[in-house]
Image 1 (cartoon, rainbow, N blue to C red):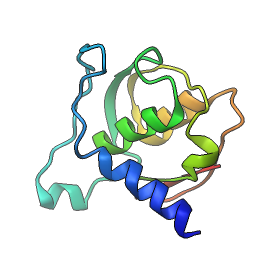
Image 2 (cartoon, rainbow, N blue to C red):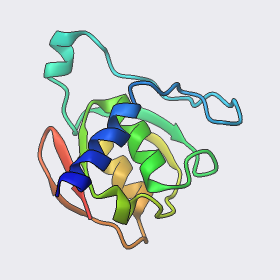
Image 3 (spheres, one colour):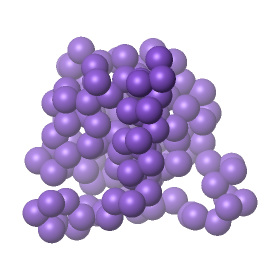
Image 4 (cartoon, helix red, strand yellow):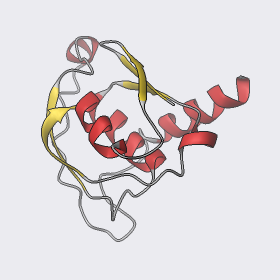
Length: 123
């Protein structure tokens, strides 16, 4: 259990250090939510943002989840050892992170098993 949490927290903690650029240097067109501490408290997994995440830049679930969590402030719970390498689809358009996750994992073995206004659990 501690290993799963360490993997999850480690991957999501890195999202704070990442830039909105892929390794190829292509800028990801993602409109980040407001960053004021007061506004962060009120963010929800149901808030809608404009996503333009190509599966050519973020083809694995762990990469896509990191970008989505970083942009929205919504916590994603998963065991990256089991879910990280799953190939995902592009996410394009204005939607909530929950809708974005469902779009990314459609047709894969992954599924949303639980969600609250602040968290999404993927297995």
